[in-house]
Image (cartoon, rainbow, N blue to C red; front, side, top):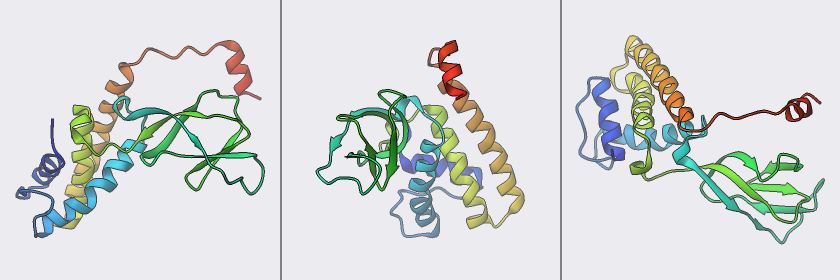
Length: 185
């Protein structure tokens, strides 16, 4: 699989720029890649429940009480990016300041985690991330709006393809009549 430098070099190639040795090189291309990579990675991770980025954890209850509305609060994991679900959809909660406030005694969450190890990325995600970075590099390095538009189109195609492949790896979700009716209330 590709390293963060490999992913950035792919993005640089898309915009017609020379590759870098690593993200800590002392030139404009490396500095831009080092700045863009984690931002674009986390934005892309947060945009879809990627199978490789889903984690499940029991949360630790905090000793302090929420200021209003609930009786307990729980700390979110340090690698938390986006909540997918709680152990039950009938739990009343609120996300605030890196915590979940609720009246429940224990909380288990399924969430999207920050994945820093690019070796864990799905190959379609890797390609999509490289186009996402290239989209920003098109202005920063080439100052070319046509190239930016082309990279934006390529990114959108790659994103649609990656999401489709990722979704096909899971069985279809069956929605029963009572769940549908409950959601309409």
